[in-house]
Amino acid sequence: MPDTPASLSPQDALVAVMIAVSASDENMRTSELVAIQRMVNHMPVFADYDTDRLRPVAQTVFDLFEEEDGLDALFGLIRDALPDRLFETAYALACDVAAADGQLNEVELRMLEEVRNELSIDRLHAVAIEWSARVRHLKP
Image (tube, rainbow, N blue to C red; front, side, top):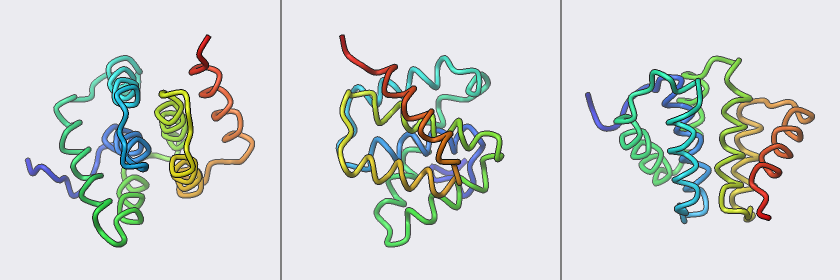
């Protein structure tokens, strides 16, 4: 199996979205990586996921970020791999990763907007998903 997959499984696509949000500001914080690992280890959508896929999927995201039209290519791979019913799941995971460190910067907010647009997330649903991520990651 090559390190850089030409296509992604649905779970790979979810991981790719999370990695892309974390890497969007060129600073993958430990809290974001821990959040990704926790979600992959505990969420039902990843029940049969081979965690050895994390590294090659992450490398695919990093490689595409280096290309001129890489973000468009990444979203093409993600849309091809994800069934529509998991689009909101992908957005929820992306929001959880972005909120994991307790702060959202402009680059992360733009990436979340890009995810929302690329996956055609209904605005009302997006607000609910964003709110739930925010309240889950509040500090005392």
